[in-house]
Image (spheres, rainbow, N blue to C red):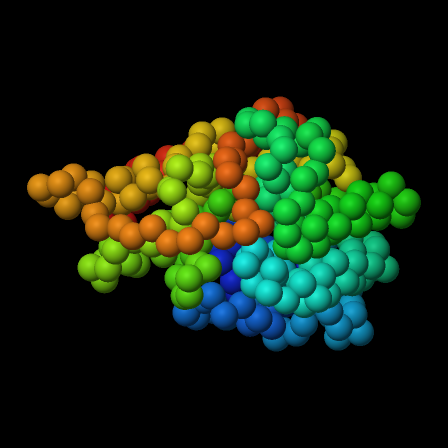
Length: 304
């Protein structure tokens, strides 16, 4: 099949690109190297690569010709930078997503798989979090990403374009961003640990997250290309487990003999972030036949 991956030189996108190419598919990549959280970008030289911005419809539209599947991952994907610059987050995540959907519609793409976020659930919903729960957006990032969800549903309902939306729960793994204070916490903690620096725990460290391995996320995206129902709908992609930041410190630092933990410091809590996340993944199990396989502790152990 012929696939197009937006954000295909970034963390999750590049892992999807590599898997698609390994499976023998033709792949087009769109990425503008926007994120400053990456130490490098991962362009697969076996793909048809284009350094373009999804906010520019006329630039990207011709690349959708004869494409079967679109994996849409390009985004402003971090909460704090979106708070600092909401207009950019909205332009990328809303206008950019509409551009992708319209180009896919114009060229009769078979299916669009949209990467969204578990931050849509906010603070008001009790865990485990289910797709049927109301949105509780706390920041411009979650507002703009859930607007993309609504666009996907509308393009399915109004125009017949088959879309699948994923709400990812704290993805980690190979190629995770490492730069800056807003880098995802697992990669950041591992880097601090290796450098002999204290891990920077935001707030009291009691907040929990459902950490999901990037390879399992790749499998979910592939499952979305063959499912027979669920179009225009949302699916949680997590593990169904939760780990606190303090527990993460213990897991990463458990080899520090003597105290059984690694040095850490507490820094100020951040506005606009959820307190607890844990996915209910029964819908993804049932409709996509998708089940996460990698455990957080096992992957961290493999990195030591």
